[in-house]
Length: 120
Image (cartoon, rainbow, N blue to C red):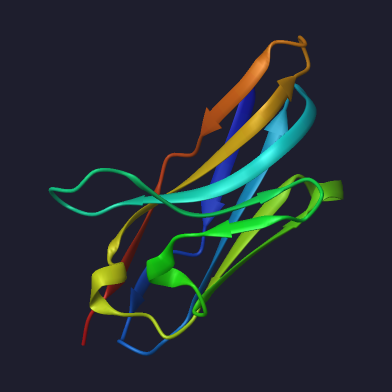
């Protein structure tokens, strides 16, 4: 079983910054991709950013230039640095991990979500 522990959400004023962390633990053989998704009230969950084990990144157009995803492969941890936050960034942010579990089955795990609120 794989556990994802997210942290770093909270309330921030427009223009401010937050850093989210996602630590994966448990029965993991390898992790290919770590990503962050978000879901605002009344909207579908959307990809914010993702990073492969090799360091390739992918961002939603709405966050390019403001958010940066990174990872520490040794710690199975991903980070999302969010700068110049806007009210429209308000959402529950979910961590996602894809790879191979210790059982050699495919791994696709989700965190419990962390709330980011951007408001004055």
